[in-house]
Amino acid sequence: MIRFHFLLLLLLLCLCLFSFSSVSVSSEECWVRCGAWRVAGEANNLGEWKAVPEECAEYVKAYMTGKGYLADLDIVSKEAAEFARTLQPAADGKDAWIFDIDETLLSNLPYYAAHGYGLEVFDHEKFNDWVEQGLAPAIEPSLKLYEDVLNLGFKVILLTGRSERHRSVTVDNLINAGFKDWNQLILRTPDDQGKRAILYKSEKRSDMVKDGYRILGNSGDQWSDLLGSSVSVRSFKLPNPMYYIP
Image (cartoon, rainbow, N blue to C red; front, side, top):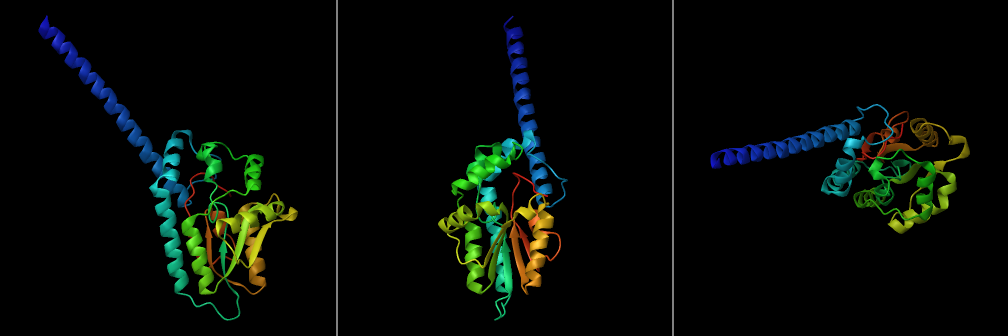
């Protein structure tokens, strides 16, 4: 009888260990798959998507609040600065570097922390309410790049998908976060509403070229910030697995 009880206990222990092992393997596999999903998005290999997959919510949260996101931001900004230092801006003041704003210069992590880090489908009205608070902090590696580019003699042009009605609060937010001395701040006018970002930003870059600007660098968190027509000599994609803007 004692031997039977011992064997039964051993069997239960083995089943318990197998169960924990299965959960661990399953969790690890999910983490790997979500990492692959994030990399595919950063490489522009995903189709258009509306929200972070539910099974990847914890992964995206851990990435955005951990060391990985900061390390990725840092290397992008350092590479961009190294490229900028290889250039010699002309005396005519027409060599330009374009920056997007949201998730490029300013971080909306406080907003997305309250909305599942991209798990929720984007809500324009809620986001606009957040923008109007003017509380978005600077993305520090981008602030360093911004200052480097200015000091090298580039004209900085800010090209954002924000609406013109947010100009005043956006200017205040940028200045409070440490950004200053930009050459232009371009926001969506009523005529730009409804245009896909890639078209809107291509049109604005084309206008810059017509005005004589040479677009040497462009930094943005969306491929629609960087692709299209009148593209820069080099573009630098910042990480953002929380949302996709076509």
